[in-house]
Length: 209
Image (cartoon, rainbow, N blue to C red; front, side, top):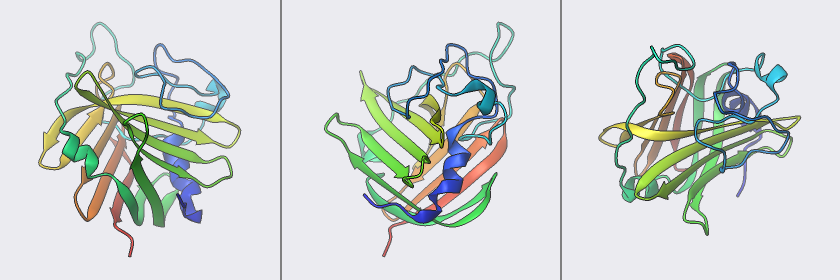
């Protein structure tokens, strides 16, 4: 798997949210993994509060309470949709907190554990991973980002809406916090990221070559 040298900035985008760790979150200095508990974050808290934000979300306030919005309900997702993610993708990313990026390389593949995983790693401490896993008939998408210094944050999101090939993922017990819209087709891969309703990156990728 190869990676483009301009990966550093989008990894800042998706690595660590600018909010306190979600309820139930824990801190660690280990690199990111796909095994984090749902809705959890693993990050150095002092640095996370001042870092640039992660993947997307809608405009509700961070966190949840007894008077806040009810938890979201997941929807079914076909394996064929996940299959469409496989392979290499290349193209621009716009609207990130670090500015626009002319080239972003990403590659997804099935693992021996039957997960569809895409990893971007520039070899200098910036690492971004999306992992799609099916458990008991329900797909999840785990987003894990790591910055230099092993500052890592991870969220487990579920599909909550679908229109054609476009699927919206959110953290079920934190409606309106983190929203990721993903749309893979045979020749294109679009992804829009929002955090509390603010855009944090729009991916417009295609098959290289």
